[in-house]
Length: 94
Image (cartoon, rainbow, N blue to C red):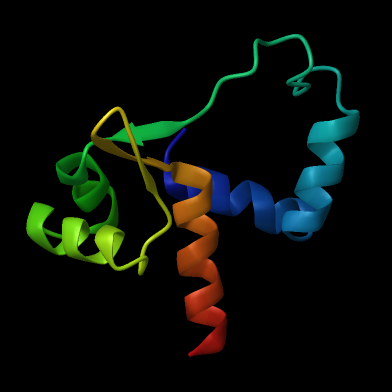
């Protein structure tokens, strides 16, 4: 689904809280019957691309704990959700 469609749906349902409630209660939208998956981004290059950064900038920010992530088996990994929340919190603070 395109981002504009998602934003229109959120607006139509009265905000993100209402969308959350809808998703929890609607049998058509329920995620409970789907397998749980972690939405992880592997590697500093991919993390940088997801954030609009160069690989070097992402690596610098990960090493200095300016971005949420950690090394697993010698490779940087970050959760898309953790990155989304991180940037949302920064926007609110600005």
